[in-house]
Length: 550
Image 1 (cartoon, one colour):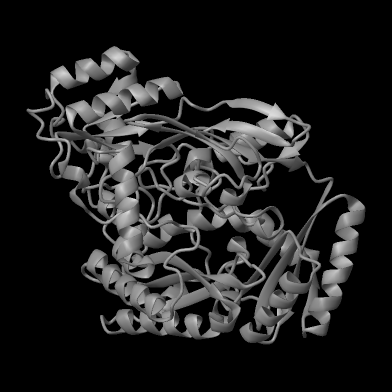
Image 2 (tube, one colour; image 1 turned 180 degrees about the horizontal axis):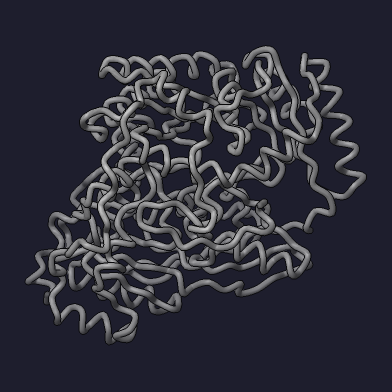
């Protein structure tokens, strides 16, 4: 399946995607994993249906007030709803759930149906002193859905799934206004009916939502051609405990700083994005994906740099390093079966037949001159068709006793190779020191004139305490990224996993500025507390629960 025909998937709390598409490990995987010490299966995951959660901390009076705003059927304290809104999709999140740890479960799940209801709920939660975690697709992989709850009378998940409409399409300006709870797959289907596309296809596409794309500055596989999601947004509506902020009266403006960019990437800490107006484009008449082989990662990266700096720029442009190419991660159906050797690059072209032909020819000349060897469309199309199958492999890998996780960063071209070496060494050193030497894979997935992102996949045997095991590796990688002067994240977001390193990256004055904005928009600090923004006195400004009528 490709992005054009995937269904919306409602994920099990610790199983990825559509149950009908779940997969088993390729036969060649066992031998490869055994070489890394993976010989015994991990403990089977706990059956979450057998767990009994503690009673909600939110009392009946507060629940009744919430029900008065939303309707009783839109306020749930059922165990299944609470567990289904517990944390996100990082490997630590999954390991905790698989072990039956549901300590981060919200006390209630709220289902507003309009922007006005979101504002009303936030105003009420501020008075009741309830922390709020905005939730729609729930695909955060950086701890963005596990806020702190100390100092609050309870925690509620604000599920935006009912805000799922295309509110307007301006075919002259080529914009569309989409509600935040609309899943990416459904947004694409509705736009396709009008001959349009958003062109945003992250690997979390089956489950992620429009609001999540905006809140975390998402980047999709076709970012070279369509841009990142934050580049697509021309307007947005933000609900806060202090009211509504509407931004974007024109495509560009010189009227002060662009406040849209303050909200984009704010991860639910400044308010709840309820809708965005985005740039859309005509549905491409043709899509062609092909592959190239380079002798080394350095040679391939230089070829990508030449393309993005001097053109013609493909719609999709990515490069796997030698290790990732050998594992054949570009084709999950044949994973561990051996790739073409060297380094595999994938280029994709979308547009009219004439546009695709012209850009393919021009890019082919550049890639050939840079030492690339054409492999044709078959491996390129295999990557495109297999891309959304790769996340399904994590579940059987975890079942088999593998610790499997990813992380990403971004830097300037001149620092790219030193950064890759430093992060690879940090991960390998930290995990080898624990007796679990890893397989570290890397690829370039997003390119710019001035630099590129690096995306790492790490696999090793699970230790006795896999959470502590990964924490040590992640900490080492974070320190290597910071020491190299690179950004701690390119498109996964900050969450809680990167919060302290992000604060060091931007500096204390920038952190204080964010805290000041939060105090204006969210003076009681109820919005996703502890995520993105290091703690300040914001969470103590609302008084005690008793003082707020709870």
